Structure formats: C-alpha cells, structure tokens
Length: 180
Image 1 (cartoon, rainbow, N blue to C red):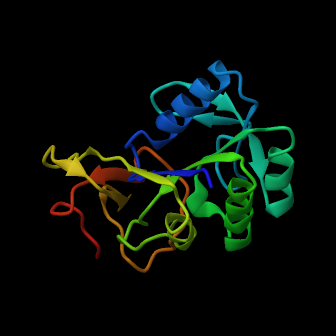
Image 2: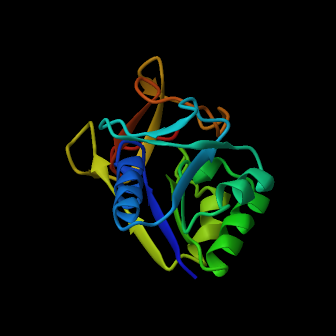
C-alpha cells in the first residue's frame, strides 16, 4: 500500500508539500491527478498560500474519487479532513490497488480535536509527514490552528467546519493556543 499523509496546522505548507510531490511524480513520467473536496473555496486547483498551484477536480463522494483515479498512477488529494469516511475508504482502496495516494489535511480542528477522516488514514499510511508553522504569538513551532472571531479566540461551541484562511485562523503553539 502506498498511502502518504501530510498533516499539520493551517499555514504549515501542507498543500505546498503535496504540490511538490505531485510535480516530482509528473517529472518522473507518472500519470498524476489531483482533487479536493467541494467545500473548499479554491475549486479547479490545489492552491498553496506560497503561490504554486496544481489543476484539481472537485470531489463530492466516492464516485468522484474513483473517476480521479482513472488512468492515474499517482493521486493527490488536499483538505482530506473534509472527506466523509466512505471517501477515505475509497482512497485506501486505491492505495491497496497499487496507486500512490498522497493526501494532505489538517490533523486537528481549532479545538485541538483530531479530525475523524484523518484519523482513519493514519492507521493505513505508509508515511506520515507532520508539518509545523510558526506561532504568531511567540515564534515557537505551531502545531495548532487558532480560530478567531473579531481577532479573539473563538468559542469552542462554534461549528467545527468553517472554511477560511486569513483573519479567521492563525497558527499557534500548544502554549499560546486557546479554547474558550
């Protein structure tokens, strides 16, 4: 099984690393395809905050993942924390069939609770790369995504899924991360 998992908080370079691996596979002559869940705002591409992008299909279930894998030897999927368990099982099945699956996503929600979809992948991953960002408060390694509301930590009672980047989230270390 060739299932690679890239995790970490927001702003840690997960998408950039995914794109780097897809670029290398394409340079080696591999047939590469990529996708991301429909909930993500940047449809049609994997888009790194650092600039690079990669063409991507919209994933809205198991069938779209299966279509992504047609004639591909390498499949990259970004934002896997948004996928439902059947879609995760489909990615695992592709890996069992010999397709190299590279998946990137947040490991923890803004409360510090693991995303169930990413947890499902951890058990089967042949490699796990955990990235860190830089804490905006103290400069230490950031392992958490701090959700903000009007510049202050958001209440733990807010919905788990709230798609956004700048202004809504910032990277923080364990010591500076707050859950209200």
